[in-house]
Amino acid sequence: GTPSPLVATTFSTTQKPYTCGACGIQFQFYNNLLEHMQSHAADNENHTKGDSPKTSSASGPQEQLWRGSQAQAHPSVKLQIQPQSISQRNHTLSQNNGLPEKERQQVAERLLRVMCSDLNMLNVLNSKDFLKLAQTLVDTGARHGAYSTRDALGNMSALALRQLPRMYNQVKVKVTCALGSNASLGIAVTCHSQTSGPDACYVLTAYQVEGSRLKRYVLGVREAELREGPEQIHHWVQNVLSEFVMSDIRTVYVSEPRLWAAGFAGSPLGGGGRGRICLRCAGCSLGAVVQAVLGKRSLQARGLHELAELLSTCRDIASSTTLALREEQCFNTSTSTTEESTQGSPAQCPTPPCWDRIAEALLQVHAHFEHICEAYGRSKSTAPLLQGLNKHLLSTLACLLAPLRLAALELSSQRRPTLQQVLPVYLRLEKFFTSKAGEAGTGTASKLCHYFLEALKENFKVERAHQVAMVLDPQLKLRSVPAYQHEDIISRASEMAAETRDGGLSGGGGSGGEERDGDGPPTPKISRMDGAGSNGGPSRGSSLVSGADEGSGQVRQEIFQYLAEPPVQGTPDLFQYWSSTVIEKFPRLARLALWLLAVPAVGTRSECVTVCEQSLAMKRRQQVTAEEMNKLIFLRSNMG
Image 1 (cartoon, helix red, strand yellow):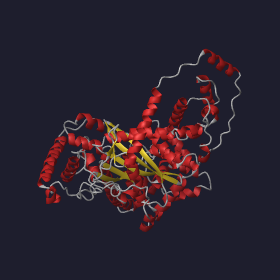
Image 2 (cartoon, helix red, strand yellow):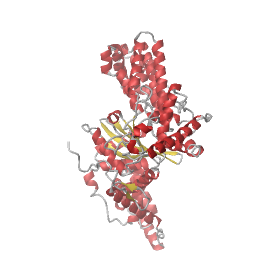
Image 3 (tube, helix red, strand yellow):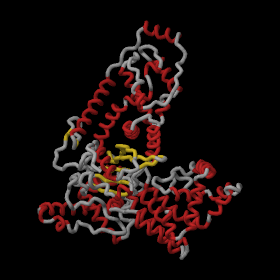
Image 4 (cartoon, helix red, strand yellow):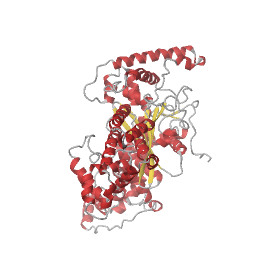
C-alpha cells in the first residue's frame, strides 16, 4: 500500500520551472529537462550526419572488382527464421561487417519507419522475401562492394529496434514543443482502456488545435493489470504528462466511468482547479444506458424473463459462423452505396467504440432475421434456437436501440468536433423515448421506454462543458434548448470564456474551482457570475472583484453579439471558422472555442484498437519489452 518512490508527487505551485534554452519549453522537474535537452542533442546530431556530403562513387578498379564479384556470386543465402527472444536479440548484431555506420543508421531508421506503419511488420522484416529484396538492393546499390544481407545488416528487427530509443527521443522533442507552443489555449487529454482478447491496455492521448487543424498525439500506453485501481492509473498519467506539458496548463480530461467516478481531474494530477475539467466518455455513457436496461440482473429484477431469453438467443446466434458469413456478404454488398451515411442499418455501419456487445448482437440478428430463419431452419440441431426469437419483441427492442447506436456513432466521429453534439443528442433521445412511451400504451414496449428514459437521465452525463461547446457551434448556438435555459447556459459560457483571458488559471487557482462540472439538463446549476463578489470574500480585494466583473461584462457582451449573428450557411469547419473568420471580432470566445471544441466526446478511437492488438501480440510472443511496445506505438502514432 505504500507509494512507489518512482511515482512523482503533485506539482508544487511555488517551485520555479526549468526552461529549455533551445525551444523555451518549461519543465517542472529537472530530470525531464535533461531528457529533453538530450533529445535536442540527438536530433541535431542526426541532422548533422544527414546533411554531410555524400562520398564519391566507386572508382573504376573498384567497379570492375565489384562486377567480377557479381559474376562469381555464391547462391542466395538460405536463412532459417525463428522467433527471437528479447535476451537473444542483443547478441545477434553484427558489429564488424564493412558497411559504414552512417549508412547502417539510415537503413535502421527506414526499417523502423516501415515497422511503425504496421506493427505486424516486425515479422515481415525478417521474412525470406524481404531479405531477398534487401539483398538485391545491397548488391546493386552498395558503394563499398557486395555483401550478403545478413553480413551487411544483421537481424532486421534487431537493427530497427536498436534505432528505437534515438528516434523516440527525436519525435518526443517535436511533440513536447508542439504541446508547449499552444499552452495559452489549453489541451484535451483522454485516458481510455482498449481490450484485445483477454488483455487490455490504457492509451493516453492529447488533443489540441494548431492553426485551424486538430492535432492528436498518443503520449503513452500502459498494459492494464487486474488488481490495479484508479490511483495507479492517476500516477501513471501524471508521470507521462509531466514529460510533455506543464502542470498549470488548462486541461479537459475525458475518461471511462471507472476513472471518472474516482475524480480523474482532481488529486494527484495537480490541484484540480477551475482550469481542469473531467468529462465522462459519451460512448461509455450510452453503453451504460443500454446495460442498465438490458443487463442480466436488471432483467431478472424486473421480471422480464422473455426478454432475457431473447437476448441469450441473439448472443448465441451472433457468435455462430453462419451469421458471420451472412453479415460479411451483406456488408460487402451494401457499403459501396452507404460509405459515408450514418443512417444505414447496423450491418452497413461500423460498430461504435464502447458500444454494448449484446445490443449489437440483437441489432445484427434483427437486420438479418430472414437469412437467419432460412439458414437455421434447414438443420434439426439449429432449428430449436429459432423458438427463442420473438419477432415482435425483437422488432420493438431494435427500434429502441437503433437511435442509441446512431448517437454513439455520431459522437465517435473522428473527422469533425463532437463535444458540441452531446447535449443535442441527449435532448433528441429524451424526446424520442418520451414520445414512444406515450405511443406504446401499457405493454412491455411502454415499460421498456420508461426504463430507457430513466437510464438515460441517470447515466448520460451532460456537463457544463457540453452546454458551452454547443453554444460555440454557429449552427447550433441555443436552438436545441428551451428558452428558460438560455440565461443559465450563457452565464456558464461567460464564466468559462472569462477564465481564458489570461491563458487560464493555475492548478491551485483557488477554492472556488470545481474538480468536476455539475450535471446539465437534469439538475441545472445556478450561475456564480451574479454573486461573484460575495463568493470571493473580502480577502480577495475589491480591485480583483471589480476587474472580474468588468471582464465578465465584456465577455457577456461578446456572447450576445455572437448570438445575434445570422446563421451560418452550410456545414462550416469549426476550427477554420474560429481561427480565421471571427477571431478578431470575438477574441475571448475564439480562444475558448479553439480549446473546448478540440475535446472529443468519446475517449477512444477505432485505430487504437488495432495498434494495441498488434503490440500486445508482439509482447506475448516476447518480441518486445513493455517499454519498447510503448515507444513503438508512440512512434507509429506521432511520426507523421
